[in-house]
Image (cartoon, rainbow, N blue to C red; front, side, top):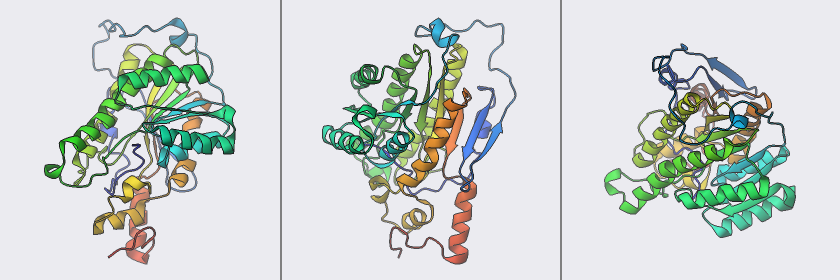
Length: 348
């Protein structure tokens, strides 16, 4: 099951992550959505390191070839894009936007039926030569390795790998009421699955002369705010940010110059997963005020994702659709003018 949205928990501060990037990366670019005009802010912390410069670099756990670290080739469009959990919701919407831009896309999910349906739909609109699909359970290491082999067979290389697959087990209840099965599903998919995908993506991309970009999708809880009724999900999404920063630091320590790991924040998206939790007054309020259809979010995210390889940027980037400023503005408009009332759900 692909996770496609934030659950109805408000995250209002667009700069809460700034204090955590003080000594690990030389710069961090936030791309945020505040209006139809894209704005960006670059934040460059002190160029200090966590360790003495006299220390030797740790030996990489995988071989870094000369082509991957020095003799890189420019990454030019069309791009080859792999999106996990992409047969529905925001993953499917992202796939369509990349195809509209002329890229080649590989979709996947755990369901054979959903993969077949998604590939058929996309090929009818964009042609057989641009779309591929296969089944993959991201929490299964062998499945992800087979996914990489499939990608190499069909596309030769992957420029952009988006880790979108995730789960909340369609469960909104206090942790004390959660079943073992639901907790295992959420944690193994969102945390273990993400780690496996990042591992295999890095191992694949390090040997590519074009290198590659990995995007990890965050969710409610990623900024450290509480997520009552889906505490396990929020905890796993908090770990996404930490994992991304750690991988950025590891690649820098290993002198890998042709791979970068980024964060991607779609905000609240009106998917089946989000709407399944719309059974409280607070949830209905925030969904109506802050949520957007997957197509609207994808139309904003994809050009910003593509701009990174287009501009040959190798700086860690956090692309965010729903910023704190935008959220505050929409909430104010609701209270002041009644805007966005009952957009998707009739409120009590």
